[in-house]
Structure formats: structure tokens, C-alpha cells
Image (cartoon, rainbow, N blue to C red; front, side, top):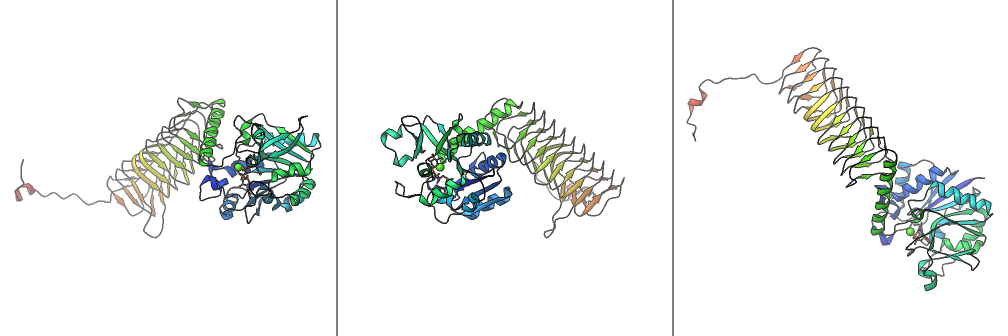
Length: 455
Ligand code: UD1
Ligand code: CA
């Protein structure tokens, strides 16, 4: 049996008041659509498709930048969820079972989809709706059951009678369909309802042979239609990630201001301090101390690392490194084990060798730095000549004196040294000392040549 997934993501989301498609609004700095696509990938469908519509270019760009093998279908006018799904006919025809998901309900998970598929098969239903029981069902489609409890229809909020409004079991917006029956039902949808839209939910009555799979976790149904709703989803997701991390052995003294993305992986006994934001595909090892006030995005961090007031993006930091306070690692930076980086240091597109020390006020850009190098205070690699960027190479155990400027391209040999205040414009051989600065001039009795006001 083949399975396919269609994610509905074409709506404009007027209530969200945003310039982008609603499904690109973010929960923990990841578009809601990304959460749903991750769920679909985890499930392992044979095919995954997304229906785009409002500002399709933005949605398509996000998908192609972050996912592989996702087909997209275009809904030119937003005429409702039923009309949206009918755009993906090609995908529906090519599989036996189709799962439909909403791009604005990020907490759906692969386990729930598996449970619902089992029910779909065991009950020989042609449509199985994933439902949840909510304390506040307002805004969601209600699950209508007959006196005998049989699931017969979904009624949208706007079309509910006062009695139906009291029903707390709701449609999560996730469904399994048998493809053949779905293809028969879609052209029969009508838009004679309060919104004038083609409701996918009407397929339940058209198909008839319906089952309802009630999820024990109501969160899988939570969607966001407004910025307030999005904020609530962020709160739920944030606490969810933090408690999952605590269960896996990560330490927190306080959760104040700590935001950790859903894809971050953090090792046992690592302590995360307040106001720290960890995003993207960041991996952090064991026994580290991260924060306070750090922002780490798409980084690989080893064990026993200290990052104090650090901003790091797309960088690799090996074991036993200490960085900060107030340092920045920009993309394509590798900090090898045992390195010490102190205050007001920026490193970009560079490799810093084992046990090297860059203690204060230094910029290292486009450089290959060996092991055991010592940078004095205030060193700068002058990597840009106004047109091109050039590299600086520094050999093992070199000593870069305070306030050295290294004018790239330039090489400092192993064990070489530069005199404090030098602006190095030529390569320095190994073991040599290079001094490139004005000679001292002494003007004797200069003080006596003019009257200086003495206080
Ligand atoms: C929908 C369901 C409702 C359910 C809720 C769960 C219908 C008619 N209603 O309501 O029963 O409780 O989801 O969250 O299906 N979309 C398109 N094209 C369109 C319209 C919508 O692609 O023309 C997409 C949207 O981008 C969104 C999804 O379909 O991702 C759901 O649409 P939305 O308008 O948010 O439906 P709800 O009113 O939330
Ligand atoms: Ca919605």
C-alpha cells in the first residue's frame, strides 16, 4: 500500500495580519510549515506535496531551500480547503492512501498519523478524521455524531447551531483518505455555506464511510490564525522543548528568556543560563555552560565548552574551548579544542588551531591559525583591500604582539613573532621576529622650546 501526504498551505491568513503566507509565520523561529513538513518526513510517506497559493514564491523558496523531493501544487484563488486539495489530484491519483495536513497546525506528529492510519485500515473506513477534545473549541470545525455515537459530519464554527457550538470534540484538520473515494468526492463539493468556500470537511458526509481517531494529546490540533494564537503556540512549544531537554539531562537554573528551537540537540549536564537562544540545527555536547545572553545558531559545539555572552552562527567549536564574554563567531569558523577566546573578539571564516589564545579586542577573518598561537591585545587581520578578501596564515606557536595588523595576504611562520604595534606587510619566516613600525625619535629638551601652560 502506497501513502502520500498533501499539506494545505495556500491560504492568505488575513486574520494573521502578515506580509507573508501564514504558514511561514514562525514557532520557535521555524515556519509552521517546517514543523508539518518534518512530521511528514518522519512518517515516511512515499510522496509529499504542498498546495501553495498566496505569495507562492515565498512558500516554494522556503521548501526548496530546506527540503528535498517535495512537489508543490498551485491554487490560484483561495476558494477553500476542498478546492486547495483538489489541486493535488496528480499526487492523490498516484497513491492508495492520502493524508491531508494543515500547514498552520504545527504540532501534529508521525505517531498520531500512524495510529489514525491503523484505525483507517482496521475499520475499513474511506475517510478517517483525526479529532481532539478541547476545553475551548471555538474556531474549529465540530465533530457531529449521531445518537448512537457514529461520526457523521464536521460542522464549521460559522455554520454551527448554538447546540453544535457546545461540542468540544473538534476536527484537527488532519485526515486519512482512501484515494479513490477522495477523488470521487472532491468534484462534488459545494460552496453553499457561511463562508462561500469549498470545505474539505464536507467530504465526510459525501463519502459517508467515516471514522474518527481521537488523539489523546489535544495539542496536535492547535493551529494559529492570529498573532495571539501564534504567541500561544510559541509558549507551548518553548516549554515543550525545555521539558524534553530536562528529561534528557540538560540543566537550567531558571528558564527566564531561554528559547531553544525544536531541532537543537544538547548533551547531559550542560547548563543553559538565562537569555540564551539556541536555534537551527545546533548540536551541543555534554557538560558545557552556555550563556548567559548567548545566541547560538546552526553550530556544532563539543563537550566541556563555555560560551559566555557569545553570538555564534554556523561555527564549529571543539571540546574544552572557552569563549567570551562578548565575542562573536561568524559563519565558517572552526575553533579547535582547548582554544581560549576572550572579550571583544570576532572570528570569521577562519580556523583557530588547538590551544591557541586570543584573549582580547581582536579580529581574525579569513585566516588559518595554527596551534598554540598567542595573540596579544588588539590584533587585526586586515583581510579586505577594498576589492578582494585575502587570507592570513599563522604557523604553530607563533606570537602575535599587541596591536599587530596583519595585512593579508600574509604568512607568519611557525614559532615566529611580531613586535607590538607592527603593521606586517611581508611574510615572516619561521623562528624570526618581525618589527614593522617607526623607529623611536627622541627630541632632547623639547619641553623647553615653547611655553606650556602649567596648572
Ligand atoms: C480548518 C477546518 C476546520 C479545522 C481547522 C483545524 C475546513 C473547512 N475547516 O479550518 O474544520 O478545525 O482547519 O485547524 O477545512 N488553505 C488553502 N487554500 C484555501 C484555504 C485554506 O491552502 O483556499 C490552507 C491554509 O493555508 C491552512 C489550511 O488550509 O494551512 C487550513 O485553512 P484555514 O483557513 O486556516 O482553515 P480553518 O478555518 O482553520
Ligand atoms: Ca487554521
